[in-house]
Length: 126
Image 1: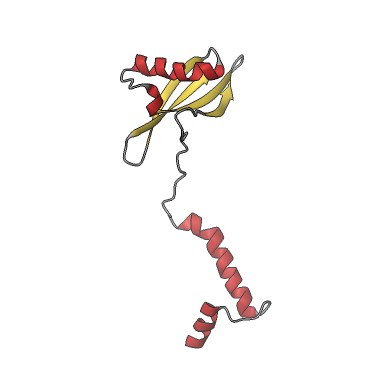
Image 2: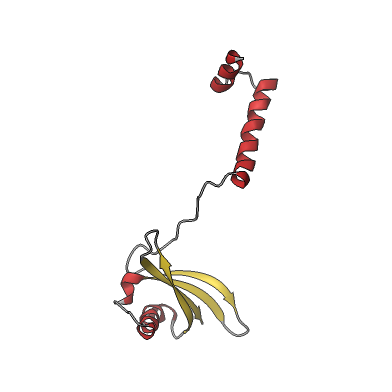
């Protein structure tokens, strides 16, 4: 039995043999079933613009007469805005040179792993 396990561990069987097929089947089962059965605690990494001059833009659908976009503005570009009105003005100040006259629907802060605000997601109608 120990020799069998050792040969599986070192992968000593020829291609096309029964034991080779068993090993390949076990690997494929692990690849396809493990993400459903095991919580690896992996989550997508939040993408934030790296440089102060960058603004991340994603399409977010459309209404009857206008298009909706999601703009992500770094918190550093907000100029220290603390109130809702100041944040709205700072978001528009960053976005309007890029997109022209737009309407800000809403915005939400984006937090890093430590709970610090690193950016703002702004939904814009254009």
